Structure formats: C-alpha cells, structure tokens
Image (cartoon, rainbow, N blue to C red; front, side, top):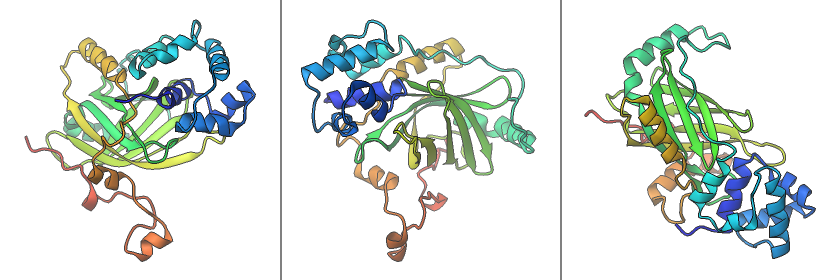
Length: 292
C-alpha cells in the first residue's frame, strides 16, 4: 500500500479522538489547512510538522517528528502504547442496563444461531472523512459466557466493545468506543445458514468533526477466519488483525462492491427508480451465508 502523510494523520486524529477543528485551534492555523493535510492536497511545512509533533507528544509521551516516518502499521502500534486493546472481561450474566422485554427471545436466538456468526471479519465501508475512499474495520465475534454474542472491533487504533443481538433475520449491533465513549449502532442482514461468511447492512455513528455529525453508511463484513476456541489464542489473533492497515488502498475495492456501498438517494434518485432513503433490502443483500 502506498502510504501517505494524510493516511497517517487521519489515523492519529481518529485514534486520539481529536477533531480537525481542535487540532487547528491548538496549532493556531485555519481549519481548512488541517483539512488539506487530511485530504492529501498539501503537506505541513517543517515548522508546522514540528509543532504538530510537539502537540501530539503531550498526548503520546515521547512522540517526535521521526514517528511520522513509520509505516501505517508501525504508527498504529505507536498509538496503542497509550490505547492498547485488552480483551473485555467475560460476563456470566445477561448484560445489565436498559430493560429489554425481548431479552429472553434474543438469548434463545443466540443459543440456536450464534455459532453461525462467531469468527473474525473484515468490513468495508465508505470513509466518512475522506469522500471517495473506503476503510476496513477488523472484528471478532464470539459467544460470551452470559449467552450473548460479544463484538470486539478495531479501526486504526480505535477500539469498540459491544454486543450482537440476533432477532428475526437480522443482527442488531450496539457498541461503545473505548476512546470517546460514543455509542455505535448497526443493523445487519443475516440470512439463515450454518456459517455466515458475509454480512451487510447500515452503520450509524458520529464522525470526529467539530459538530460530531451523526453519519450513516452501508457496510459489508466478510469472514476472514474462524475462531480457534482458545480464548487467549483468539485474543492474540485479534490483536494482530487490529494492527493491520485500515485505509483501503486506491483501487483495491472492486467496482461492484463500491456500487453496493455507495449509491445516490433522495428525490432525484427516487424519480429514476432508486431509493428515497439509505436502505439495504434483503433482495439486494450480499449476506447469502454458506450451507457448508
């Protein structure tokens, strides 16, 4: 992958939950300047790069200008010196919190269908901060002792811990970002099968701009491996997946997948037979599973 300063800066901002507006204010530059750095249309001067590195050193002790010479994977590892993923503690009782009248049904559905969704997955979804590009999340789904499916997700040093709740022919996902405390939601199609190899649907979360704008996008998750059944081994494998590059290289996402993830919506699209709202009906879903 051809890695750029823009890729690295975007990962640092996301990993530290630092908005462009906040960074610009701390550096004393216009927000559009930081926007051009993230977009890759310009590069900071040596003076601004030194100031940027000094600013980051307050959040990552020991960070220097030389850290920008690391590749994306190495820089992600550098970030995780402060924000390392640790396996969430297993829970023996159903998750406490909001009352859910259908928790019994969810537990029963998980007991019967949960094994189909356990495994390691890699997502592909549009990059909200960089139009025209895509990113990958790496996920681990496995059954928790409390009877629910637990989700661990990593994206460029940002980690999510959550739950996957099967209901009818869909998966309802709710998670929390470790770095910001933001809640992340997803609704995925999940056809009946013994092994789910592909899931797709819609994800909703705030982006890290000045207004923390609520943003929805389509997402596709593809199985990349199965669990070993040994928790410590699987935790280590997930940590390895978490260190992988998360920005999709230009041209790496097939055109058919791009068209599945990004489409025109609204009045003009509706008049041409398209969608009024962002939606992913089962008839167009890629979640066909496997009968193996």
